[in-house]
Image (tube, rainbow, N blue to C red; front, side, top):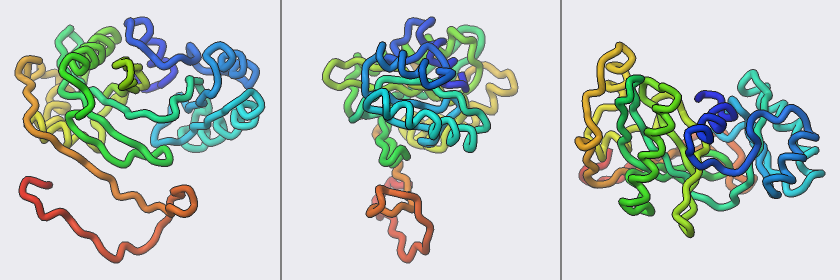
Length: 255
């Protein structure tokens, strides 16, 4: 599940909806162009081993796809040591939902919550739990989908499954699975009261899950915002410098 192209194939076999795209890694420009004609432009090239917004290029037509293919391959090779790319239909404006799931190998799994986050310039800016845009019915379907996918591949441990959500149609589409504890996991901990790091260590030693699905109760809301060193004038390019002032909210309950 750590390879994004392979994870998409696993999701399809498990009956989990995915963003229309290639069945796996596209080996060359011509194959990428054929896939793009099939799914429809605009399309997005994404690094199969990627993360953090690296190795991603958007193409509006076949000429732009040809121009961006080598750039995305080189960036992926430089960042991840593997230049494999896969292709998806480009969704221009979206909110990304995450379902943080804990899964044991023996058909014992739970999902904790569905969170929302937004990005700028390919980098995550904030994360909120639980998502205020999902009603209970959609949240249950999304979390059930995440559990089914993790169980279908025999995943054992803590992981996060990410989806795109279309608020107009209430459809969601699998994007990828992060097979680790993510840095933004505290928003889930704050609304569930569960120590995710401790649980991940327990699962890694072979212990059973300490919770059943019906024991996961969401209380309140939590939000995490990232401080990014960027130059907003130059399309949010990363920029280093001296932080002259930092202020934290003086609100009870903030951490």
